[in-house]
Image (cartoon, rainbow, N blue to C red; front, side, top):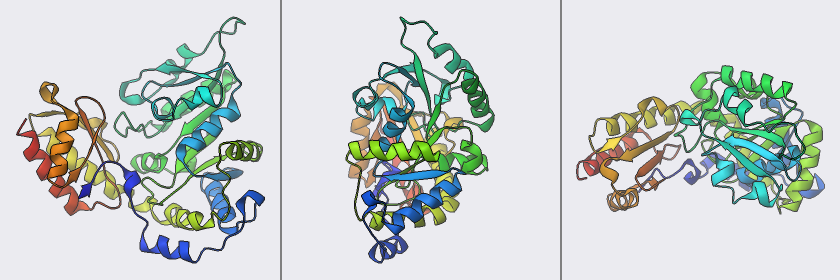
Length: 342
């Protein structure tokens, strides 16, 4: 099977497996796991931050950050299709006691103009804004990238409004690769940043939250409350170190493979796709005539291709380390054939 459902399906590389076997470990709840400590130090350095914390999932990292920046009864501004809203089990409300103030944006890219209009007025009988949360790249918008200039305007505006800004940077290395700049430069104005080791970077488990030392010290309390205080977690951190150091350099391959798929799909009358929105490793397209996306994915499965239905009529492919150019060429051929049957 050629698995294009998500970049979360990647299996650890031989180097990761070897590092996991030989990892030096200790009890991380006591702060005594040397491999975890090394990973956290490395992540903080790469992002130009004071500190970092390893968490099992990106969802946990995002929800810890939201809790850090907000008080119960406040609002979190986010894009209408954002991961923190749709895929994190209503934890903005359940864990932080906040509600989402959603804003729909073209290709998922929030601007300061969008955000400014969503900030609650400073009156006592209106819920106050506690946090601005951005997503870069934007998953459900098709892996779109928010440019640095757009972010800078939001950072400046948020600073004037005295509001913190968090980045759901699950695929921020993809965004940085597409823009040709470092993740430190792309994220320098955020108060906290979460990024995943287990998506495009290929580690089997784990995400990181980076920020100030004070914020990360408090994050450890919330991680423990959510059940994320692991013990000999250096076994996982060993793979994370390799992911962090070696895997960003190859993300251009995933982006090129996504472009290949997008161009083939665009040539078929059975599909509608915004080719300009295919900027990284995600391809989302709509089936014409309101064809059934779930049924389309079942048909692909029977032909050896795994894909995701992300709406009644929309299909998503995600390229990654475990599917090479040849796999994507084969997948493109099968998809093209299936689209002609609609």
